[in-house]
Amino acid sequence: MILDVKDLTMRFDTKTVFQDLNFSLKEGSMTALLGPNGTGKTTLINILMKLLVPTSGSFKFGDQVRLGYVPQFRNIDAEYPLSIKSFIGLNAPLIKTSKIKAQIKHELEETHLLEIQNTRMGEASGGQKQRAYLAQALLDHPNMIILDEATASLDPVAKEDLMKLIQHLNKEHGMTVLFVTHDVPLARKYMDEYLYLNHQTIKQGKMSEFEGDYE
Ligand SMILES: Nc1ncnc2c1ncn2[C@@H]1O[C@H](COP(=O)(O)OP(=O)(O)OP(=O)(O)O)[C@@H](O)[C@H]1O
Image (cartoon, rainbow, N blue to C red; front, side, top):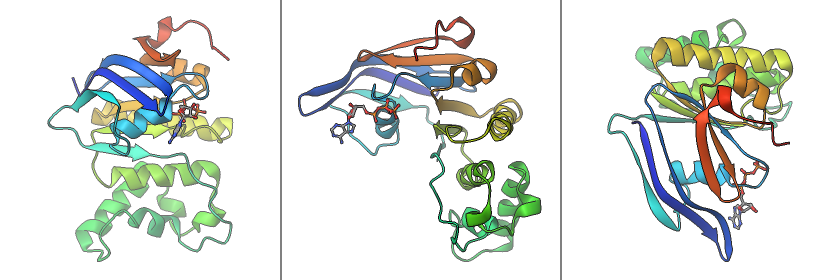
């Protein structure tokens, strides 16, 4: 197991977001974290990223885990001056040795951004910006990535491109994927398992057996 969650409970003041969540993720799995608005998906991710402390319960990552996090791309100002390449390099030491330059180039290739590396982030499309965030995360050589609504504001083609890239990382590099989304059809197409957070509890199963689209 790459992640084991035990009796995890989160309360804000008197509001219980979820109670006694139990689940685990297998190494190399592709899991969609689904659930209606406000059921605590982001809260759960923030706990796993150690940005929030749970009220009770625990979780444990496998000893070898290197966790990467890909946020939903922000509305970067059209005037934002950094190129795609420089933006990715923000997640690397300031002094760019040849080794680091080679790593950045590798991630530009991996995320299909090499040819447009000098485009300003402000001018890049939503899909390109989202792939730049992914490339930033990949610089840390993660073997597990958490993506928070990474396809939410992308057009259909950009969505498919991103999902194919994630699929490639999973199949070719054995990356474990936890993908927060509201897009059930997309999850059905690309994910193997689901975690469904609702009514303060979580259900886990095979994506092909997920019933309904809850929206
Ligand atoms: N810091 C906080 N203080 C108090 N309540 C909070 C805090 N953070 C989140 N909440 C509440 O916890 C609940 C879960 O929020 P969360 O953002 O985790 O849901 P979500 O499933 O990610 O929603 P969405 O799908 O809309 O992104 C919400 O009712 C929210 O108002």
